[in-house]
Amino acid sequence: METVRDLLTDKEIEIAFANADFGDIEYREVVKYTLLQYACGFTSGNFARAILRELGLITSSDILTKKGKRYLFAAFNKGNSF
Image (tube, rainbow, N blue to C red; front, side, top):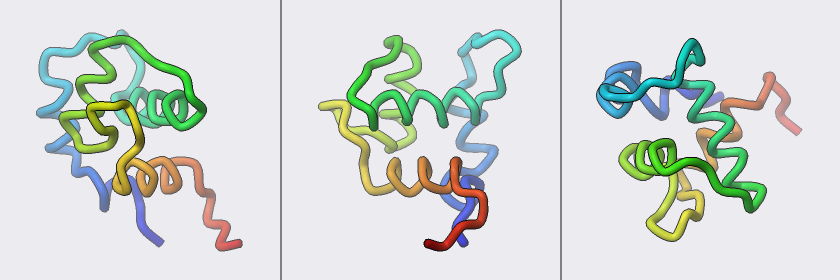
């Protein structure tokens, strides 16, 4: 089963969030819930959107890429294979 770390390394996350300040929220949580917002048709702040675009998780039209969909599934999947 593919994991979030298979799709985005810690180094990639670190580089993308280099100048970000999301308080005490873990960066992978920001990615996870921001992707969920876009998957459900909502939007996010400009900085979070820019990070997702930089990571290749959403397009310039704010649509999840294949990688974004795979990341979102891996982030919420608890080992279910149904």
